[in-house]
Length: 108
Image 1 (cartoon, rainbow, N blue to C red):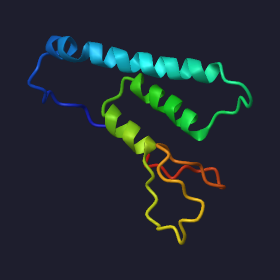
Image 2 (image 1 turned 90 degrees about the vertical axis):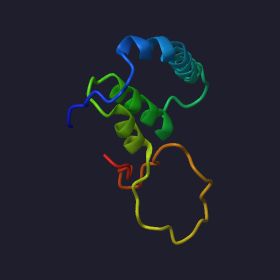
Image 3 (image 1 turned 45 degrees about the vertical axis):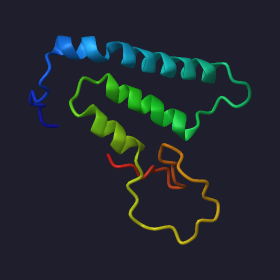
Image 4 (image 1 turned 180 degrees about the vertical axis):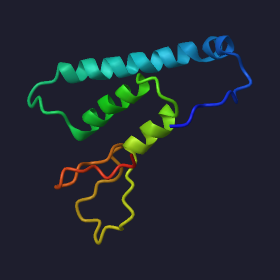
């Protein structure tokens, strides 16, 4: 990964002052979602979307640049082949469903 250049016209303190509370609320939403999953009944097997969310959280805290791009790549389907039929498709799922071969098809 390449290093990030300083392109934001705001200082770090200005960014924190402007956006901290908004993103604090988003983190609390994610924490509540994960708590809700912990309290569910039935199967304890992780859904592919849950696994993708947890993998995205790891990207957020790894300290490497370009986190937004890497999370978007993780959650995006990079498949270029068009399906031959829409049978069984239910629309967007927000994460890449693993294939029978065990790969997700996301851009990495």
